[in-house]
Length: 256
View 1: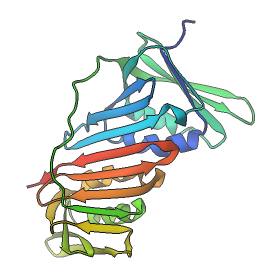
View 2: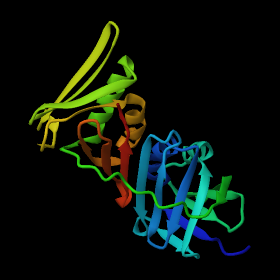
View 3: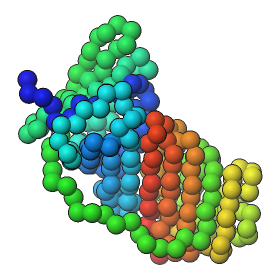
């Protein structure tokens, strides 16, 4: 068989699952950029309301072989999601792609038994997309917190409404408010309880889709730290430092 365009081995499939499953929820087809330095995703979500920037360096992989300078492969997200669920903590996961193939090969190699399982999922090589510029806006509020804390707040708000208002009533409080007829929800996150830090250059208030925030925080279990930035009626920027040296950054459009 010809040499693969790329062959990447990640040491633990269960950790790979925690990182990649949340990303599959953002795209119908995930655009995976594979370079000598690592793998990247930089694209708008399928609904065009969230910009997603994800990076994982080549050093995160046990084996990293790329035989072309830059490769862009679009992968069926639903199929990738189903496959990565099958990985366990005893498996290494191997991604292989052969130029011109309609498939991405996803293999699980059990470290204990040496059993290898292989899936082929729909994928196709595409030209590199036009450069996507991040919003050039001044954000006046920066909060750092445990990713799980934001996830719980968003999950609560989702019960009440499809919209949440985020604001800073003072320099030590970040509030989330959702309301509809006959029901409401409010959460106050205080400096040091549970916010790690909060910097308010100017008080801010903005509304966002709860579903967009819910999708953006799906990766909370693989994230070590979360930084939230926003300003009045401006996009929200979420940054997460994740396992295996990966980074996830998202820009979420406001509701005006």
